[in-house]
Length: 467
Ligand code: NDP
Picture 1 (cartoon, rainbow, N blue to C red):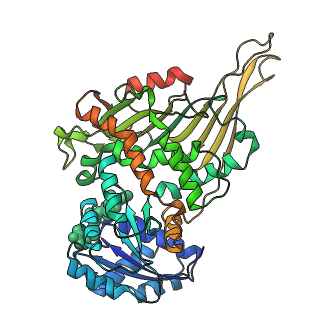
Picture 2: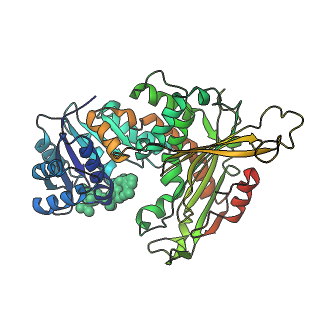
Picture 3: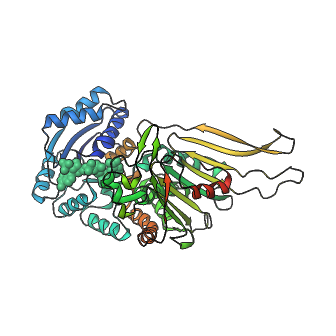
């Protein structure tokens, strides 16, 4: 599906997301499709003149190989409106000013509570039939609030008009997984609990809070990363094979997988861990303990590292522990690790048992490696291991450019469907409740480390590979 022209109206145009991710994402999209005719309209409560806005847009588009002529065309046509999205009168006037001969995408780069207020306003207005809403996470704060938000949205637009953005769905890792899984017989035959013993999805960030306490101290690592991004990565890794890649089938299969997912042992206490960082030195920079960062309220007990283990309780995956982990101020381990079961029988005469196979998808940079057993290198019938390694391709356009291109084309393939957003919350809600009731200890780890010592010992016990 392609669209040649679109009006992209960004609500929250003066914010961090717009300048740091959305407009640079548009730049990568224009690099690939320089003839795309985007009429960009910025709006926020901040007062900018059109010239000030154009300067911001030009700066944000001067990146990611955006061709000069494509950038200047967007800059020449863009305009800015001072707008309070919670005012019905102002929103009605704003929407009327957008309607022309092209589809309109309303991109909500707003704080979550303001997005909900804006949607309540939209629900009272007369809207064009082909209006598209692009919404940023979080999609609610619990299963119940996600459901309520979905009810609100579908009271005034159809689900096909809603594009819930989770940029992990546009990441090269996720798209590479789909090709690797469904293009290779050697993988498709072993992709179940018959051959796979455990899976880990780890996304550790090196950066600490970086002055984002306003958002992060209320969210924490579980809500920020696991609930949304990593559960979707898991779904793409473990879902059934689609017969075709389209928005209906792919999202049905993601929903299907998540509906079967539950906390391991149905026990939110035993299946979860949380921790926060303590002060340290990273690359000569002194980082304070999380509790001493500006804007943090220590009483909130916000975790900067979270880990949960889930099980996909269906015929393919039952019994396989899947561990999801993400945190800040860590060593930066980012990978999916698929551990295979030991071989059924080792021929008598070999010196010892072979190490089980391990498949790793590295995230950013995108790599693939497969550890396999061989013999002959050390002794004729003595096992050793070999690592087959490859760098995987990436596209300049990812991930925001990729996501935007689908939104602009009106194709929700890479958007999160409403029921999927609810499922993600259903899975983590019991953990959030157990943490709120202080049933799981809040541990600590030094900045720049690989995590709390106890966790590392547990991981090293599994395969001697702490990270
Ligand atoms: P910011 O606080 O940086 O920006 C919020 C924007 O909303 C500002 O432009 C602000 O305008 C505008 N705004 C607030 N109230 C109103 C109102 N009543 N009417 C019109 N505009 C209003 O937030 P972010 O950009 O960081 O985040 C935006 C969304 O994106 C959030 O949902 C966040 O969860 C999500 N997100 C952010 C990421 C990031 O890295 N920043 C990453 C992934 C998702 P003004 O200043 O003029 O009031």
